Image (tube, rainbow, N blue to C red; front, side):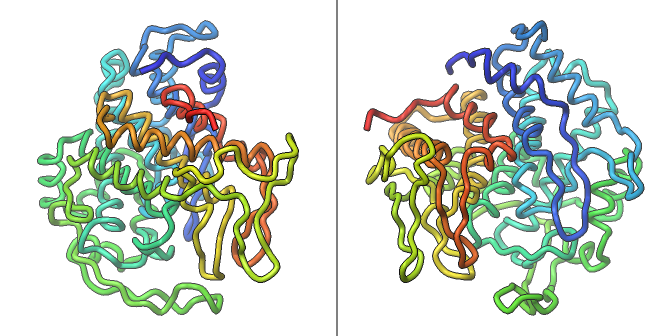
Length: 414
C-alpha cells in the first residue's frame, strides 16, 4: 500500500471531529469531517507514529475519538449527543465510515490502548447499534420499507447510494466483533435492554431514534408487517406493506454471511462501477446530459467507452432516466471508504477479481472527477441538474478522492 502524501493528510488533520444528530424523518451529517476522519483512520493504522504538521497521526486520531466516544452530554435543546443515530438505510452515507473508523481504531494498538474502558464500551454499543440497523434494513428476510426512526421510507432495491452504506456497516461489524460473536449478539438481542444500556452510556441519538415510534421495537425484536403511511407526492412511496423477520437471527446478505467480506464487497463494487463511460445520455425527448467545459473544450470524457463508469450516471428514479453528478458521488463515497479500509487491513485481494475491480474503479473515479471539474449538466427528478466540483466538495469529496488516488491505481492512459 502506497504511503499517503502530505497534502491530503494535512487537509484531513485540519478538520474537526465529526458529530451526528437525530432529526426525525431525515439525516444530519457532517460529511467533510466524517471522510477526513476516515482518511486519518486509514493513515494512522498504516503509520501511527508519522508526523504531519507537527501532529502525530495516532495522537490526532485518538483525540478525535475521545470526542466521539467520551459520552459528552447533549449540547442542544433537542437532546443530541455525538454518535451516529443508527437509522439504517440511507444513513449509511456516513455510518459506514463511522463503522470502519471504529474497526481501524480497534486494530491500531497505539490508538485503542489510549481509550478508557468506558470509551471502548461506547464503541462496542455504537457498533452493535449500527449492526442492528444494518440487519433490519439490509439483511435477508427483512424488508419492512422503513428505517429505525419509524418514518423514513426504504427499499433494498433502490439505487446504490441508498443501499451500499449499511451493507458496508455489516462487513465492518463482522470484522469488529467476529461473525460468530455478532450472530450470538443478534440471537440474544433484547430491544429494551439495549436501549437502557445505550441510555446509561449517554448515546441519546440512538435512543431517541429507536424509540421515536413505538412500532419499531416489536418489529426489530420479532418481525411482523409494517405499512407506510400514504405518500405525500403522487410518485412517492407510501401505503406499501413490508414484512420483517426481525434481528434475533444470524445475519445474511444475499445468501452470504458477514465474514464473506471480499465476496460481498466485490459484488457491490462491480455493481457500482458497471457501466461503459458515456457523456451524452438521452434523458427524454430533446434533452441530454453534457459537459459544461469549465476547464477544457472537451465534449466527451477522456475515458469514453471504457468500462467502469459509476452506475448512477446512467440509472433511473421515479421520474425516469437519471444521470447526476452528486448521486454518482454519493454512491462512490461509501465504496471508496470501504475499499481504503480493506486495503489498509490487507483484505483487498490481489487476484484477477481484485485487479479487475481496481481497474474499473480507476476509470469510474477518473471519469467522475473529470466531469466534476468540467461541470456536468445532468438530469434527475425529471429536470436538469447543473453541478460541478464545488457541489461535491461540500460533501467531503477532496477526502474521498484522496482515499482513491493515494491508495489505488490510476487508470491506464486514455
